[in-house]
Image: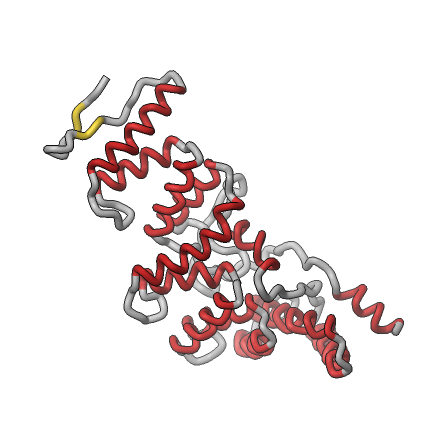
Length: 307
């Protein structure tokens, strides 16, 4: 009992803070810098990850390959005796070892071996490991390329409630990212699930506006998984709309421009453009500023200066 107690005291906890080795941008050949003062969409991911229908338990980081294998062996023995707590922790130990092997953090980089440990974790319902397998199958890293397997594991992680996977299901259907025919209806369905998880937690209009800009430009890499954030006109529109509903004037102006010029995959709609510009100008007037956006002559679609 003392051994079991000491093991759990050693390996239970919230996990470590990301290190400088956590980024996978070198593997996925994406490099981008981002000001730490700006909010990152990945903060929305981490807030609800452990609230998914199948939460995972995080183990503390492993110091070396030998220690990692010893930890895993000890927990496998506990699982064999029916210890449910060790069973949940074991999946994260598999994942942590795969993560270190993938990055070469404290041990030699070995994507093939990392894939094996991610597979073990995924088989035990570990959602980040399931998502990782989808990325590796798609990018042919550590295993043979298989779009079918990538789709299967992405779907598994998404159906288990993993927010990053839910967002990428939308992205896959929007762009054909997994080799399938783009399907806007399916994309919007998955994005709606993701937004239903995230928007209630984002009540700051400035944050919502920045998320919208990131969706429009895809300028932020995800710290843990390394791939670039989703670039999605559909999501950009939804987050500009969310920011505008929270009172963000620049978001109102951007929506007016999008409807005026048919941007963000929107049809040209002059009446909606006029409506958003009107709200934008009214907001400026309330702030004691002169309106700067032109009104639109609906008949000719040509702008006329007001005021």
